[in-house]
Image (cartoon, rainbow over all chains, first blue to last red; front, side):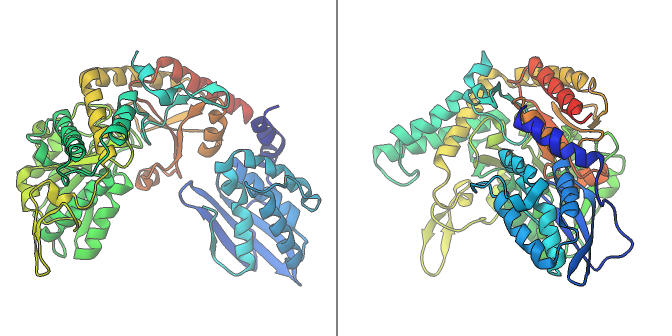
Length: 148
Length: 400
């Protein structure tokens, strides 16, 4: 199976058909908008932090399948972590998605490792990472993020 | 065979023959253009309009011959009416700042259209910020055609300039610019036509159009990137102040003042893109040798064929269905984002553009963030249109 098929069939489409935590929640404590204006990806992240934990993460937006699947995966993966745990995983994720990086998998990242295949399509890395930077912005109290 | 003269079309992508359908972003270049560039760097490399040595003279001659070729291509009265620029963007900015800026005051109006590329919107917004002038827009209909019913009202006593695109880069619409120029001139309004997407496809005759300015981008018409020309009526160019100050654009400099050179040198400060200009001249000669009528005919045949082929893809919606259009197809496919389509069909060797194509207002009109855009050139084939359609069907199958 080609990288392309693998990426879409095994990872992206499953989350596209069954998006986790999609839609604007009724309440939240933090939010940020991830926007790649040039390519048109837009993802809005809503976050509730309670007692230092990422209790609930939702996302909404209009983007390509890679961006939406990454957001779906991120919310499922990150919920329940402490802020500092998440920062650690975000650092690993950045290394995972670094196109000049050598690492294609971190045990700590579990199912998120499948996104490393996106590195085979360098112009799409920014789609896969947008929601993560948006969540980081929300945690840091920043209104917007971009990966362009 | 014309196609074989384009080395860039012979490459493979992901092991598949390249199907290059991103010509509206930039075209491929024929061998004669590459040879002209090499010929300058290898055998005539010197600065122009300066030295008395042989190389400088031959380089200058090549550069000025290129200007002559471009004048012939667009039927300008004289090569002196052509200013070498980096592309249409620079041409529009030059006209905004040196021709229009002195003519407008707060409350005056500049008229553009809904079909403009950002490069024919933003320079006017900058001008409006500088002067207090107001930007007005000729509206568009659901087919992506300009609605000209109210053009006479839009062209009023406050209108000081009109700048319109000849062919839309996003939708392919060919605008009736000759009629529009006539309407503007009836009200005493000078007109710039952005010809970036027209020159590669249709015969452009600036005298027949009677436009005041016309811009051409080299890389869209099979020439080098960073090259282009601005045509202006001589009476305008002669009266305009320089755009950039520097060498070449002066005839005398003292610390007290400078005397500017004659047109077009007045607008060509500094050492220009010599190789680019020479390559662009070769592209003009190439187009003339193929024949502008033949190119236009081939484009229309491709447009008809590709449109029918694309409409066979279930769920595909064409954005922009103007009666008169070039072979540029913007489309969306239900349930699949444009970027995903672009990535998937790239794996079948098919290169298209995805996104808003630097025309955000057009996509705001259609309520879309962007589209896929397949843009053909005369060297594309019906078979390539079929490969595009097959690859789109495969992308759809992947999402099912």
